[in-house]
View 1 (cartoon, rainbow, N blue to C red):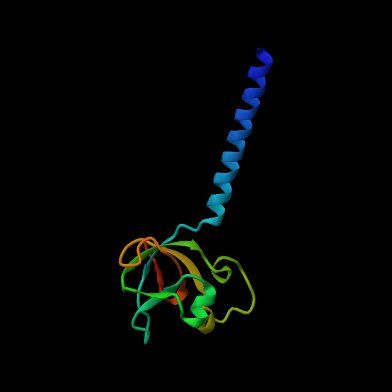
View 2 (tube, rainbow, N blue to C red; view 1 turned 135 degrees about the horizontal axis):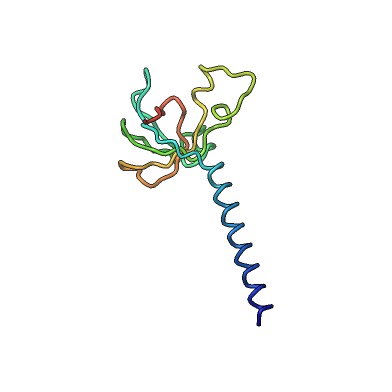
Length: 121
């Protein structure tokens, strides 16, 4: 009987290790920054699209009310890593994956241009 108990403990230890590794990986992938989505300069309202390809075609996109709250699921690499060739006037329209927290689009995960995002304290 002790042999079976030993194997069971080994299995539980492996499960705990896998759970711990999963939590660490999920934390490094998931950005979790809260943002306020709003207008910018001559652009009166923001929009978000289901995929990056849709954004280019403006199909399957949704207008987002000014003041919509979101949580960044994934920042574009230009905002999360050092790089060469950054050109702010072009790169401000890079897309970030955002989970919408309120308003008519609540619950949707959309790609939103960076220029419309303001970090919330």
